Structure formats: C-alpha cells, structure tokens
Picture (cartoon, rainbow over the protein chains, first blue to last red):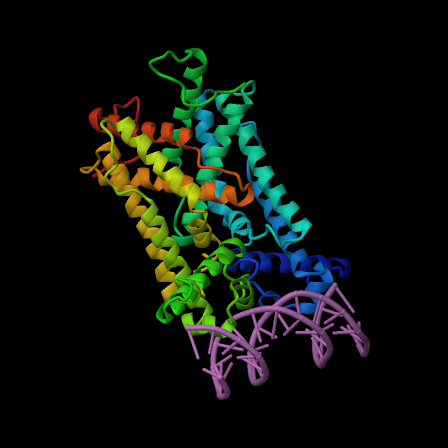
Length: 218
Length: 218
DNA sequence: GTCTATAAAAGGATAGAC
DNA sequence: GTCTATCCTTTTATAGAC
C-alpha cells in the first residue's frame, strides 16, 4: 500500500494535476491560472505537467472532461422515480439542487474560462460544447419523464432550457455570493405553470379574446 | 469641427480607450486582454493608456463604470406604465428584453472578468458590486410597481431575483450561441404564476392537505 | 515519469523627449 | 497629452540528466 505500483505513479500524478488545475481554473479562470501556479500547488514541476498534457490547452481539455464526467455521474438517470407528476418533479428538483450544490466547479469552468470562443483550440471548443450538450440532453430527458412529454419534445426542450438557464444564472449569483443555493421553490412553481400553460394551449385552442403568445409544440 | 478643441483631445482618447477595452474584455475576459491588445486596437500607445488610467485594474474599473451607466440609462424608470398588471408586465418584459439585446457587454464583463473575487483590487470589487446592486434595485422597484407589491418587499425581491437569474443564465447561453435572446414568453408565465402563488398563500392560509413549501413575505 | 535549468516570448509598467 | 524606447517580471514551453 505504501509502495504504489510503478505503473500507477503516472496516473496518480495525472489525477493530481487535473484536480489542482480544476480548482485553480474554476477560481481564477483559464487565462489567470498559470502553469507555475498549478506546479507549486500540486508539487510537481512544470515539465511533468507538460509531459502529461502537452500544453496549457491540453490541461483545460482534461479538466473539463473530468468535470463533465463527474457531474454526469452525480446526476441520477433520466428515469425519474415517482407515482405522479408532483412526486417526480420533486425528485428531479432535489437531484438538480444536490448536483448544483455539490459540483460548483463545472459551471464555473464553463463560464470563467469559457472565453473559449475565438482563440481557443478546436479540442477545447469541442469539449466545452460536449459538456453543455450533455447537460441539455439530461435535463430534457428527465423533464420529459417528469411531465410525460415524450410526444411533445418541444415543450420538454423549453422546460429544460428554462431550468438550465435558472441554474446558470444562480451559478453566476453564487460567483458573487458564495452561499447562494438553487431556489427550487420558485422554480417548481414556474415549471408547473409552464407545463399547465402549454397543456391548456393544446386542449383549448385560443379564441379571439385570448390570443396565444407563442407557438406550441409540433 | 475638424480641429477639435485642445482640451477635448484627452477626453476623446479616454473614451476610445474605454470603448476598445470594454469590447476586448467582454470578449476575452480581463486576464486574457493585454495592454498591447488595447493599444494596437485603439491606436494609442501603451504609455498613453497608463497616463489615463494608471494601471490595468484602473482600466477595468472605468470600463465597468461606463457599462453600468450605459445600461442603467437604457433601462426605463421604475414607474412602469400600464393600466393593469398584464400591461405593466408586458412593458417591463419588453424593456428588459430590449436592454438585454442591446447591451450584451455588461453581463459578460461581470462574468468574464468577474474572476474579480480574491485577487482583485478593492476598487474593482466595489465597482462590480455597485453594478450588480444597481441592477437588483432597479428590477425590484420595477416589479414592485408592476405587481403592486410596495407593502410586500420580500415578494418583489424574489421576483427580481428570479428575473435576474433568468437573464444571467440567458447571458451565459448567449455566450455559446450568439443569437440567443431572452425568452420573455416563459418568463411572463413564470412571474405571473409566482405572484399568484404568493397571493393565494396570503389570502388562503394553507390547510393540512396543502402545506406551504416556503415562507411568504413579512 | 520526474527533476533542474533555461530558452524565447509576452506581459505590466515606467522614463523622458516632445 | 502623446510618443519612442526600455526595464523587469512572468509566462509558455523545451532540453537533457536521472
């Protein structure tokens, strides 16, 4: 136990670098995090970091990939349990709130170094998009199960967008007020109202007195 | 007209620097924006920039102050016009959506360089907070007028938080998908539902069958 | 795989002529 | 107020011994 197998030494170092870099980058952003900061924080020299990742950009890609994997592993499967809508919604909101509270890194990585737009490498851009797409897909699947929207994907998409934008906005707020949590109460009210809004629009075609404001699904 | 008064030359240069720096910083973030980038973009040498602002931090403070002033000037006064709630709400949402679309800089500045937390100067931190507080105060006042909540500040505060978090989250989304606009339709539904939720909670104290999930105002 | 040492470039900031 | 030229630090990245 004390003498680790030689072949694992590299892997352990690699993990340590990713952990350290992730913490620093989510705190200061990509540009403001230097190799020397990572080096002095995790103990390994700069050249070892370059041996593992090749470039600063490579570190970022690895960090983001790690954050995505960890977050998706923490999220429950899309089949939300519960007998009725309210139970499933509560389970969904609890899962989101829990992941939001326990994984503050992911969103800050996407934001703080998300300057990744013009000058970033293709690999970094691709990894950012992969992260974002995975979150959208999960939220859409889960909300589709919660509200039984398998035949109305556009509604599920709107609810997912709404939820994720609220989560992103709360992540920004947490940036300034560290204690901030995701307020699931108002979000719950809003999601139920949105679903009811689309539901009534489908069953009761709008008359001249109450014109619909938006197109419903399909 | 062709020969500007000598005393205005400095002011015009100062404005040019602030404009250029604002564009660059909102695009790449504070750390990734260098003095030489600003210099080559606006034509003035680095030493002139330092003569005007003293330090890179000073530029950031000026940029953020400018963004805040411009955004608040674009927002309508808190007394939202309209005879009934729905009219005032529509006017409010139109104003928010318009400001959101026409002033993409502000939010990105708060986010992209908002790494302003640990290592930033006191002046920069203060300016960031001033910006944020001004937005919160405006939204709270406006929503208080829209829904007539002058005697229930806690509800107005919740609605303002909700609105601003949706706007922040949408700003993040726009980061990745440049065409993204603030969806006022779902936000409208959500705000009306939230207000109705609090309204009913006040008038009809919850019975044992329908326990309240959160504390209402006061 | 890890270390010491260093190259090569870019960064923030200043001096001093004009 | 603006310019040229420069100082000093830090940065990314690499060479080569072990």
